Image (cartoon, rainbow, N blue to C red; front, side):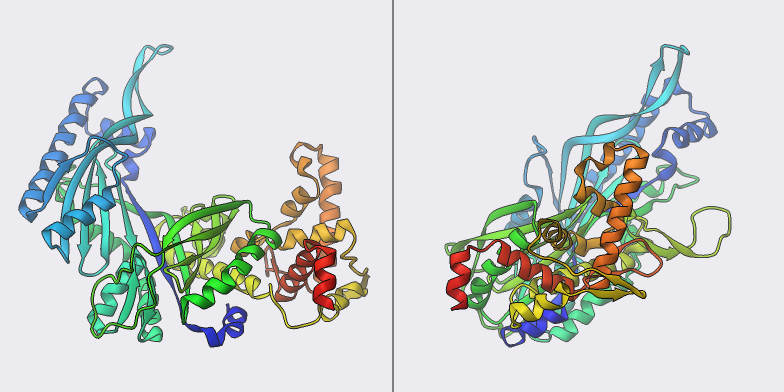
Length: 522
């Protein structure tokens, strides 16, 4: 990110990084699998033929308790006819009509899909057995504007295994901190267009990483679903808290909308052509007029809804994870990394078994214990992507940038050939390292092998070994010229700033018309 900030230092007011959306899930692990639920029923001496009646009694207790909580809190309760209803918009409308600025807003209930246990007959054994099946049940939503974390919601599955899901927004959470400290800001939706003290705002965002997540989520669950404490008495079952999806955003706040409007098409084109984005989403966004900082801290600062413009969101996917850029609120360039598959990353931790092994680099879990590591990886992804964008325009001449890679190099005492950017094979290699998704977690030998030959998955073992060896030789070539670097103690590679710059220049030139190049060089 430093390269990007250095390049546009005169145009930028500041940068703010932190959580955007956090989707949580609370699971009673004992009841969420066939084996666990079967053992629980056996221990409680509940016959399988009585399962439906027992489960239905729990469901009735849960729904009755939620209705009592809504009545006690003095909030509206609505049953929705369709799960397609925009629940957040409805909750915000209720809060606006009722003048609710903080605290519980409403309770909504709606029938939605779930994956729940049931008892079925086994024709082969002629016995009843527990099975997990997709079904539908009533989900109970509580929307709130919490004094600590801001606007969000939690919802409870009213049928076994009584999963809890929720969504918080780090920007709404940060707003609460700014209001407590009296720091002036301009905010539109979930985006800050200006902050009076960016350094202090970043410190407040960083403080979210040190949150006692289990305590925070347990407090929300205890407030709105107190029935869960006694539902399985006298031996209550605890929830395991995980983050099913997270979004970490880095917002570059420009001094005015004119500057971002001027440079964003170039950045988007770079993401489309040079980084070869496979996904482009167009959207219609609101752009308010430039606003000065308010005299005092207030709520959302909304712009003129009649002023609209068409923007572009460029998204790069790496498996189930992604990184994207888009212009937001007029003067904010947002880079956002979304992590849905945590096992693509590693964390230094103890193994989850009884072997008492020493701590090692192991796959990252979805559990809230690894959320800080998740944030650090997301921030690194955003920074790599922004540095890649900064490599798009350069003040160096074409010869100064490309010349060094067109000469032989030395790598670990061995000679490496020169690159020939005009040859299709080497140009394809540069196109590979320019892929935007490598900013998320880097790439491996197998990714390059699949790029070289899309049929790699269907090859015989000897053919795959030959292809892998070819990919290894090309990786050594790229390392010799300083275009990529190996991540220590892993088999992953990251593109260096030099690699980003060389790939950007060569691919931009290769996509340009000869007449246009001649005219610009003249």
